Image (tube, rainbow, N blue to C red; front, side, top):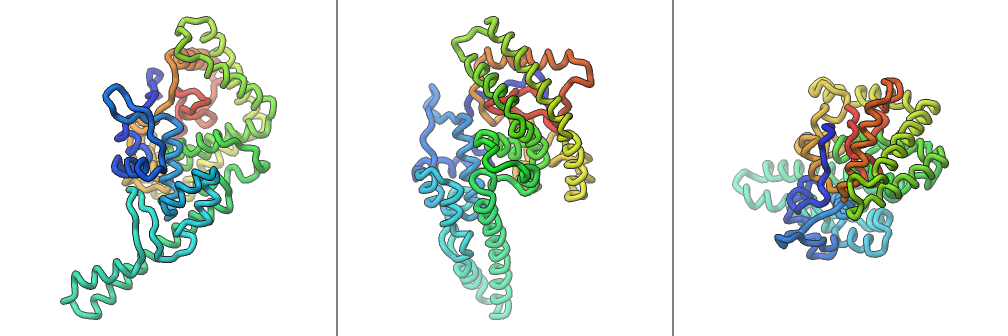
Length: 367
């Protein structure tokens, strides 16, 4: 990533919709039914969305794509058990013709109504043609219901936010002790998968595996995260604390990378690329890269559907992070220190992250 990249602190509804793969109309509908709280508005009277808003939108989109009704998603958020309750009551888990959610915020009804609509429209083609089209329609909907049911089952089996990630990512995390990952870790992976696809998130998971298995590093990470968060708008960019925290961040990242190497996690990363190439040989040949769509494509579908792909830098420019000028300067200084390290001591792309609330926004994504 270009070192001058600055993530937005908030985004407008159009950018929010583009990032999560929805529409402004759908997001407005979420507000109307109480699924998404109204965000603050800018001086122009338009809605402004921050990091937490985007996380919630990603949750909504993932669960709606699984066929869970918007009312069930809203009730689950209200009770604070989004994945478990919504997955238990969502329409996709039963495979029935109940009303379910679609990705644009509207609703879809049962299979028979679609078939009979087609029949009325083309009644002159004869009974055989009508039945053939009806069978094809039902087969397509049956396939979609299977996909939705599989997604709901994954949410229930994996539990909470883990089930919102793709199989490729959850397999990377399967050997970790239960509850060793934090909610913020999984939210970060959800955002990363949205931008860089499953391979990018699986590689980034290395960081969280190292933190989960090295308590002293997790403790130090928490301390530095808090120090960076304290660099708010009341701190000048030339305040001595900015440079001090940058030095601490650089020292921590060096120690984290050493722990990753010592534990062999970097070798696991190399294997990930081989597995990905095996799973998606056609995509690799088309894109010329081992990642989810090439070095400057964002596989926003988390499933390789290029219809939802966008330029990586464009995608990152639509994901807000409320970083003050002082905090951004701290990140720049930490990057400068990293660039001064001998080549062997610098973090390779596979060990680094795209921007998160906790982490630096100027590192290179894995490609």
